[in-house]
Image 1 (tube, rainbow, N blue to C red):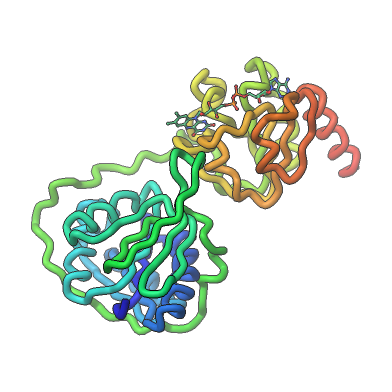
Image 2: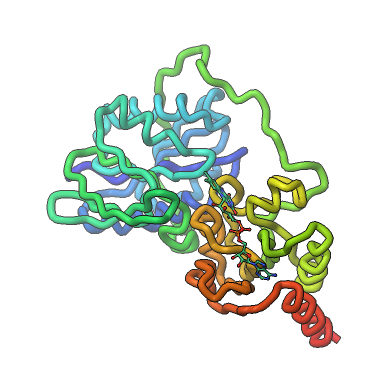
Length: 324
Ligand code: FAD
C-alpha cells in the first residue's frame, strides 16, 4: 500500500468536529506504519481557517465550492471519488457520524473499493489493513482484513482522543478544483435546531440519565434535583422519550445523541447496546439499578444495587451538604 492515508475532515456549519481530530490521530499512526504521508481532505466553502487548523496532517486537500458549504453525502462522495481516482490514496478514514455517514459507502461503490463500516480501530498488517468493528449495535465484534486499496473505513467516534489529533503546526494547504454539476440531486433545505430553549446534552459536564426504572413521570423530579445540584442536566433512555416524559433532544443512544460528559449517572437503565453506544465513553459512569445482573454494570465504573428513588435523593442531599 504505497498511496497516502486520507482523513475526511468533517465540518458542521463551519466548525470542524472532534472526530476529525480523532481520525487525524489515528491516521497519523496508520500513515507512520505504512511509511506514507497523511493528508486531510476538507470540503467546505470559505473555510480556509479550518483548513489551517488541520496541522496534524502533512497536507490538506481543500476543496472550496459554494455547493460544499453544507455536508450532503451524495455531493461529498462525488468529490471524494474524483480526488481518489486522481491521487490514488491507500486508505481513507471517514467519520461515521450523522453528518458524514454514507459518504464512504457511496464513494466505495463508485470506486469499486472495499469499505468497512462501524470500525473502532485500525492497524496495519503486512501488506494490508486490519480493522476492528462492532456489529449488531455492539453485540458482536469482528476483525476484518483488507488488502485492496483504497481501503475505505468508516469509524465511530472515540477511536483516539481528539487532543492527540490537534497540532499547532501549519499544514501545507492545497486548493483543489473539482467539477460539480450546477444542480444537485440532493440539497439541504434547512437545519432543524433542537427545540427552542432546550439545552444541548452533548455539551454538559454532568448528566443524570433516567430509564424505565424511574417508573413514573412525577419521579423525574428527583433526577432533576440531582442534575441541578451537579450543575448538569437530565437525559434519558428511549422508552422515557417514547412515553413523552422528556423531549427527543434528551435521548441518549443509537437513535439519540452520543454524549461524553465527565459524569454520567445511569438511573434505572438496563444498559442495552443501543443505549450504551451513546454513553460508554463518558469519563465516569455511575449506575444505579435494582438488578445486579443489569448489563449497565459492565460499562459502569461504580455500581449501586438499589432503588433509584432511594439513591438519587440521598446523593442530592449529600452534595448539598458538602456544598454547604
Ligand atoms: P429497560 O430495559 O426496561 O430497563 C429498566 C431498568 O431499570 C432495568 O434494568 C431494571 O432492573 C431497572 N429498574 C427497575 N426499577 C428500578 C428501580 N426502582 N430502581 C433502580 N433500577 C430499577 N434505547 C436507548 O436508550 N437509546 C436509543 O437511542 C435507542 N435506540 C434504539 C434503536 C433501535 C433500532 C432499537 C431496536 C432499540 C433502541 N433502543 C434505544 C432501545 C433499547 O434497545 C432498550 O430497549 C432501551 O435502552 C431500554 O431502556 P431502559 O434501560 O430505560 O429500560
